[in-house]
Image (cartoon, rainbow, N blue to C red; front, side):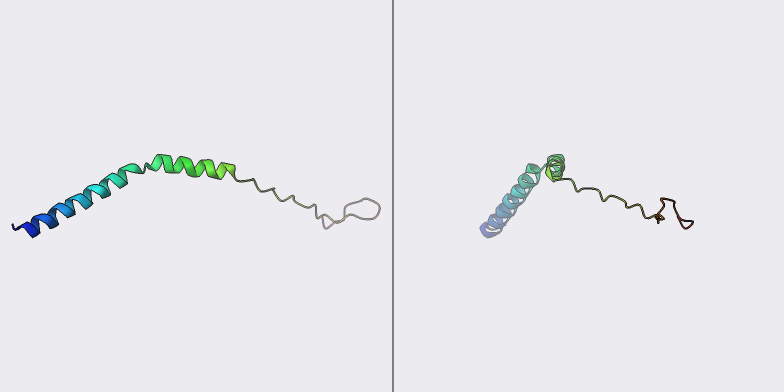
Length: 66
């Protein structure tokens, strides 16, 4: 193995080690917890109120269609 090959091998090992360190820095539990906290901060949407659609007669009775 000549010096150039050793140099390439050293650089490759160094890059792989850096990638391992970067992947260790991110904890999936922490990421998920952060997402949940951010979602809890969002304002809740107001629920749509259901309308009563039964037709009412002028005297107050409900029609047969209801």
